[in-house]
Length: 271
Image (cartoon, rainbow, N blue to C red):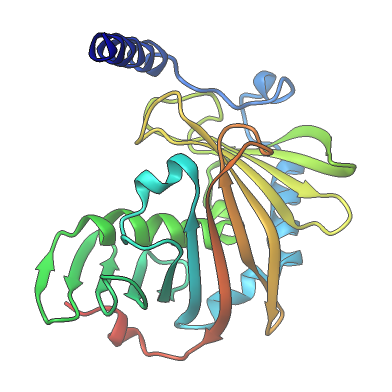
């Protein structure tokens, strides 16, 4: 009987995913739904945010290095590719490029290295095994670099528009929508709804679609704290949640240390 119940629930779950995946998530505010073209207010707010955070200064450096820890929670544990929780990593990035190197510092994969260079991937195990086209290198590095550099990266969006104001936990925020071509839902292009603290001009929340995972999927990233160095307020704690900002954490990124020019670019690109 239990097997039949389990099978039935599995079928229901699959049908639910199929039905909902046919619906394209749309995270525009009501104000943003009447906007068809970029506006200057949204662009000014987004530019002011990344300058207030000093993220424009990141491009003064050829590389930066993070002592980094990531912890997975609940269903998020299913996406943990490192077989240890939390995982301790050393990460080298080239700013504003998709070029990075990750070294694992604990668990069974300790000593493993993963490289990503503008679409090319490479893997080297602690024992010396080498391989190209590695999944961790392909998905993990570019995605995490994008969210760590998000205040700088999102300036490249081709459509930026003011989307109203809101209050969250007693704090006042400007809302800005960003995407490419149009802020209306598109099958293969993500939307971003960005909350900028009115008092600090810092980006503190990002709601985003995840088109390459599922057309209906929506996540939220919270910038909970920052590490300030050389005029840059770099995010030191980013928690990732479901659609609601106060829903349970899926995983959390924690930056322990931030260094500039600690390594040369040639050590990040290993192929």
